Length: 210
Figure 1 (cartoon, rainbow, N blue to C red):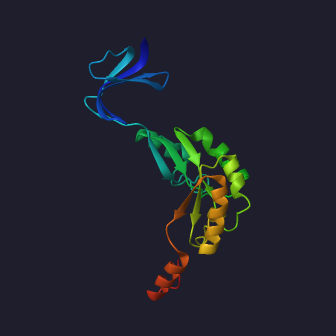
Figure 2 (cartoon, rainbow, N blue to C red; figure 1 turned 90 degrees about the horizontal axis):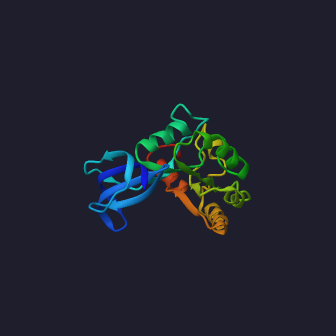
């Protein structure tokens, strides 16, 4: 058998621990991990890794591209290209956008926008807030991989980016959690409490949460 690419002399990170050996790649896919000393296939191209550590592709579970509304930072193309260069093969993007990813239609539009730009695998979160309880299950059905909730008010000047993402008190949050639970997906929470933050701001002489 001849493969497209053979990466030799690597330290392979496997479920059983580190193994000295080679990685055979064909048609863009890993087809074999070969321990040092075992027979390796012929290859059209061979690269000596010189003892470098070879890891499985990394999954980044918390990313923000935010194009097209804030593409001065980066867009989905540059974000995923940078991910690939750093060994990250899957990114999961948070739902802060304009509009925020708060219902199935917006989720599908975002998928259509970012999909053609992607250089790595990706998933898109949906929002779960007090003002979109009736669209959470639809987001799950559309393909959202998890849900994000913020426990503080929408930031001034960025209100549209946080529609369907905010539950400022415990009762609102519980209502969102109950709906998310019906989907079987994970609920992710931005770890702060609006009332506690506001009280501490006032103690420090600030006029509430900014």
